[in-house]
Length: 449
Ligand SMILES: [Fe+2]
Ligand SMILES: [Fe+2]
Picture (tube, rainbow, N blue to C red):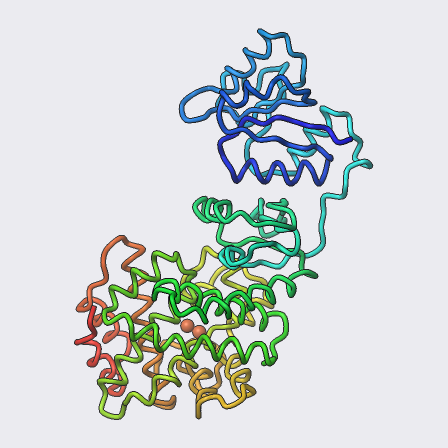
């Protein structure tokens, strides 16, 4: 029979991670109570270990709990989680760090029960595959264990079990998001199971006619992530990739039309806490649509091509942004010492790779592959440039300007100010000096903010 422990803890994420990992590694069943009163009520049961976080709010509940145990002369081993209680780090009391260092936690608990390393399940699990946490929100059930990254040191990534295969409680996902987790992990060999499930869910969701425009924007984001995950796995256009991306691209054009002003779209995207690449692609699509409606050679006919191009243009960067969520701009991905050489190569060639992919897409809009290849201003699709020339196609220029505009919106938001059109256009004019680019910038003078 497995051992049982009672844990007084008001942090659901910490509690869940402790519970999943202690069960998996030391066969300890953790019962979590979030309030002191409930904790006292549970003490009549037989426990092998009692744990408490240091503080709940301002109150030193660990000390209160420990004093109570002394009073009723309960000899059960006791551990305090975190260092902010008066009893933390006392010689006779086990103190656990209270972070997500699972190895340390498991070791400490194993020591209390004198479990040998041999008896413990191996702590290392094979490779992990990152999944945006929002994808999991669409599932009722996780088809496999889900992990969280607990050490971000690139030389030594460590993972802890977040929850086990089975029911997903949506509010738990929300709490992870609120605590700043944007990506969770599944065992690499299980990734397709999850991606396929999410893909079905997204398609069903998008077919729902009662979805609000914000919900649709959110579901489209999940579709985008699914396509990216599938392509990361195998950079070939499979029938599933065609089906889901077509559905998403069609709907993007409609959703964007339902936001007459940029501000509304920004709010819609921000409320969903969209991930950078999706945010950037949707906003660029919006801006490009405005340009082609206002430029002499443009017209409504370009809309489909624009949505298509922007959907795929950075698709190979998705796994890199998933792995390094600290980066926001494409250039940043090149000039840093975190990415591996292989990853940097993907960054440098992502436009060419995406262009080649689009070439194999059945019935892709005419010339879409060339525009995707040229979206950083180079006809080869390799690298980045500061010298924007006239040898790329007109629609590629529109996309380049739109992306630059979006980068400025992001910069403004990071500085906590609302984007100012005049300022942004001044930045763009200094960056793009050629006549053809200037013409495009001019059309943004009347972009409805
Ligand atoms: Fe981009
Ligand atoms: Fe790009």
